[in-house]
Image (tube, rainbow, N blue to C red; front, side):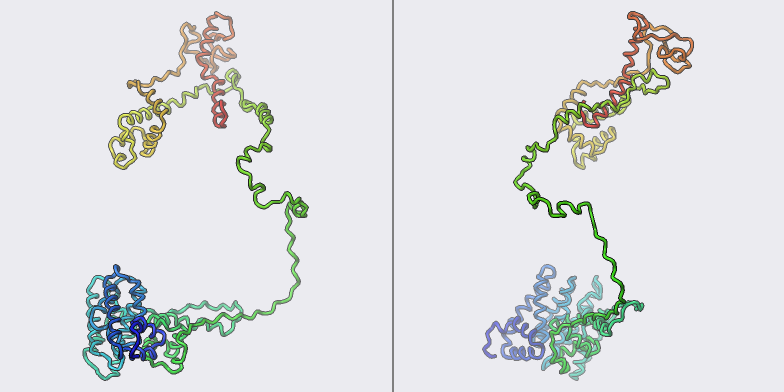
Length: 568
C-alpha cells in the first residue's frame, strides 16, 4: 500500500472502488489510502474541486453535462469517505457554486447537486473524529444563502436549501449525531431550527402514489389470490426513486426489502445505509437485485358446454371461377412477371401502329357527322303566326362591358407609360398616392395591377397593340350608334313612324289583315325591280339584317363550336 502507482490514487479510481465495494469495504480502502497518501489524493481532489467550482459558477456558459457526469461519479467517493467530504466542505467556494448552479432549470443536474450537498454535510458527522464545528459553520452559511434567496425575486421554495431540508433527512440525522456524541451546543440547535423553517409545506416533496382500483362488478372470472400481489409495490415506486437518487448503485429489489424492514420510512432507510447498520440478513443480500413484478396468473376457465358442430361457411365465388387461369390451362408463354417487354421504350410504343385506329374509319365518321343537326333553323320564325324571336343584336349586349374594359386598359396603359414604377411589387409603392389613385380609378387590387404590368412587360404584341390603339387618342368620347329605327327618306306616310297598328305586327309583312287600320301594305323584296316600295323593302332588309334570326343562329353555333374546341 505504501508504494502504489500514482494513477491508482486518483479520485476517479477511488470513486469506482467505492461504487463497486460499497460503504463498508470501500471505506476501509479509502481510509487506509488517505492515511498513507493524503498529499497525492488531496492534489487529485483539488484539481477536480477547482474545475467543478469554475464550471458551476459559469452557469449556462459552462459544461453542465460534463459537470453532472463528474458529480455523479464523485458522489460514490463522498458517500464512503468522510475525509473527501471534509475536503470539499473546506471553504465556501464549492458550496456557493452548488447553490448558484441550482438556480438553473435542469432537473437531472438539480438532483445531483442535492445529493452532493447532502453527502458532503453528512460526511462531516462521520469518521473517527466528526467535525461538528465545521458542520455548524456550514449550516449557518446555508441559512444565510437561503435568507438571501428569500429576499430575491425568485420563488422562496425554489432554492437548494429548501429542497435539501425537504427531500432529505439531513437535519434529523445531524440532530441524532449531535445527541449521540454528547456535545450539545446552542449554535447547532439554533442553526437546525432556522433551517427547519425553510422546509416546504407538504413534508416529503413526493407523496406515495396510490393506484385507484376499479370496482369489482362480479362479472369477471374468478382470479387466483396471487393476482392481488401485482399491486403490492406500486405505492413504493416513489419511495424507491427517492432512495435511488441518493444511492444509484442499489437495485430496486434490494430497496424494497429495506422499505419493508423499516416500514416504508425513507429517512430511516437512508440513515441506516449511511451508517452501515443494516441487519445481517440485509447485509448479506444482493444490493444490485432488481424488482420482479409478478406476472398475472392464467385464470382457469370453466368447461365449455358441448354443442353441435356449426355449419361450414359458404364458399366464396366470383366471375373468374373455372376460367383458364383457375383451371391452370393457360399457355405458359402468356404468363410473365412484371413488364411483358422490359426493353420496350416509349418511342417503340409510339412507332408501333398495329394498335393505332384506322384513319379511314375516323374520316368516315367525321364525314357522317353534321354539326348543324342539333341546331334548330329559326330563320322564318318571324313570319310565322305566334313565333317569338329575339330581334336584338347580341353584340350590343357587351357594349357597356367592353367600353368599361377599354377605359380601364387605357387608364392602366397611360399610367404604365408615364411611370412604370407605379406597378412595382413592394410595400412602399402600394402605400403611395399614385397607386391609390389608379386603384380607385380601375377598382382593381394591388395584386391585379402588378400582375397586369408583369404580363404587359412580357407580351410585346400586347404592348404594340395598346400603343397603336391609344397613341392617337385625343380625348374624344366613344360614339355610340343609335339603335332606334328611322324612316328611310322618300318613304310614304303609311310606312313612317306609325308603322304598328292594333295587330302588333309590322306593317307590310305577312298577313296584312291583322296588322292594323289606316295603313298601306308594305313592299316585297321579290317585287318588280324599280318599284319604289320594292326598293324601300330591300333597303330596310339590309339595314336590319344584323337583328335577323339567321344572324343569331350563326353566332350561337360559333360560340358552341368554340366551347367544344373545334376550329371555325
